[in-house]
Amino acid sequence: MADAIEMLETIGRSASLRHASAEELTHILERELAPEALVAAVTQEDSSLLHAMLGSRLNQVPQVVQTPGREEEEPEPEDEEDPLTSVIPSRPK
Amino acid sequence: MNTPISPALDVTRRGSLACVGLGMTLGSHLTPLARSHIEQADVVFAALSDGVVELWLERMHPDVRSLQPYYAEGKSRMKTYRQWVELMMAEVRAGKRVCGVFYGHPGVFAWSPHKAIAMARAEGFEAHMEPGISAEDCLYADLGIDPGRYGCQHFEASQLLFYERRIDPAGYLVLWQAGLVGDRSLARFKTGSAYRQLLVELLEQDYPLGHPVIIYRAATLPIDRPRIRHMALRDLAQATLTPEETIVLPPACILKPNLAMHERLEALDRQDKTDALA
Image (tube, rainbow over all chains, first blue to last red; front, side):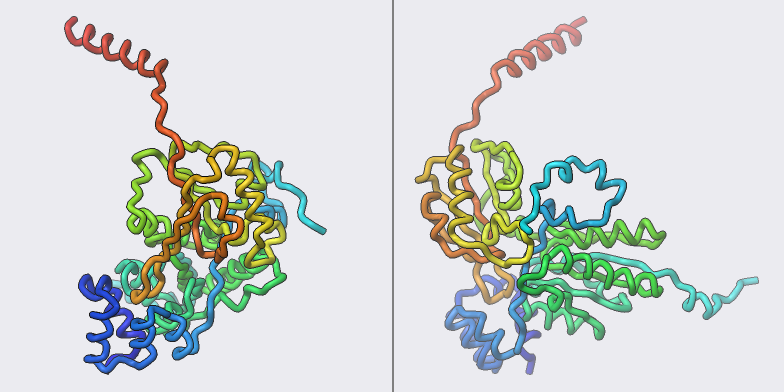
């Protein structure tokens, strides 16, 4: 029997499963004896149930560019030529 | 005579760095080449958008090191990103084949992969980036937008507040990371409605307050649907936004023909015909 991660990968790779309705997917997962939390996450359209079962962390996503934070960089020749650095507003103290 | 490859070559092997994108949705977007980089690496660093996706990555390699713990509320993200670069570079310098795995595309709205690759190359190591399917790619598909139709501007939302930029309301406007717009400290993961109100006031210079706004989030798990919300610009400040959500403003005016350039093109066309007949 596949575990939740393997089943998620299978769903993600499948043209028929990836866009199946929650009802269809629930039926298929129950037939394949999927972990209860995965079935519940699909049925209730709430993937946090899956996070809870797998004990996975809630990740931060921000990755930013051209922010005032660039002024914290150590000076480099390329940065000296970067016009952005000359108009960066001052940071709060 | 063939010279046998000395085992010592393994010891003196130069480190290398590959930064690859995992795409946005588990199981759906990972390219064969990116997977190969992951599988062939000595060590894998992961900066992913979803903890479950991170568990999936751990199935592909026995030594996956999450970069998430280096984030902290109150700590500048630039400090975090510099740490990421140093972590990857330390292993490269130690002669390891290093793979940095980032959600979406590793080179889009991502500082550390570009920085790490530049640093590795400057130090004489082999380094390159493999693209991945980004949130922007998903946005076009899920919202049915073709950026070529009217043109499309993309900004990190804060950049619109920090710098004097020119918005073209005849095209699409896409604002990233609006949930933390105006955060000059780089130490917060969200900002409040007063910050978004400043953004609304800025946008009001080019758009009516009743202009439609789409708030979008790509699916990270294949059991999820993309999250798409519609509202008027005036309601944006009071809306709840997460850092991973993106704001899309459709065009507010029609494309205005450039009559002067049309005349010049017509003159060129006439000249072309004259030259062809000569």
